[in-house]
Length: 310
Image (tube, rainbow, N blue to C red; front, side):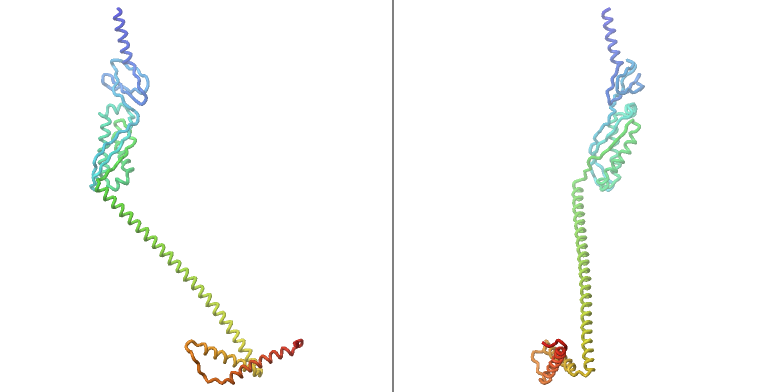
């Protein structure tokens, strides 16, 4: 009797252990009855029918990352490169992930590697090196659409490294150096061009200022000549009036003044060193005497005025 009770207790413990299932957070379990999927257990405590139901697949529902191994890819312009990357995915339907595909991780990896060769093989090397975001977006769209029936959501695909051959890297380095030298020459030429423009503009402004200066100087010279001419005209008019009134001393003054100016011009000529001219000294003395008489007559009139005596 004791043995029977012991067997019953042990059997009860076994049944209880098989009936009670605890699913930890971040996981989901599938339940199979006689080998057929019936339901999915979410995180928490669950009870199943022992010996009829059993746990099928235990799936991680958290986002998972897998490395894509390095592989060789031939680009559209026949350049051989090596490429690797990473894939981020998450199981959103445990039943589909468990029963729609065998070896889920391997299936995702092979699908990603195949599409990397397809997408990158349709592009030139320059596009591959400069448009990684475009490559990642195309890969994500293709792989996510292909894995949707498996109950997956591919959240991100990133290309980690693109390695061209060494000779191609050296050629790109030379090309980059030549491009930089070209830009430097262009910048230098632009600087020289700008300097020439500024220099020409400065010379233009200087020429304008110089022309304005010459214009102002000519204007002032003309004004001075005009005033001189007016003074000479007035002096001539005064002399003419004096002659008209019969003043012989004014005639003597006018002639003596012109005579002395003519002698001054002849003496100051740069192409003459010695001047021999038959001059009558009495004419010169007479002209000077005429000037003296004019001065005496003028001062005499001033003295004859009232209050003019000392």
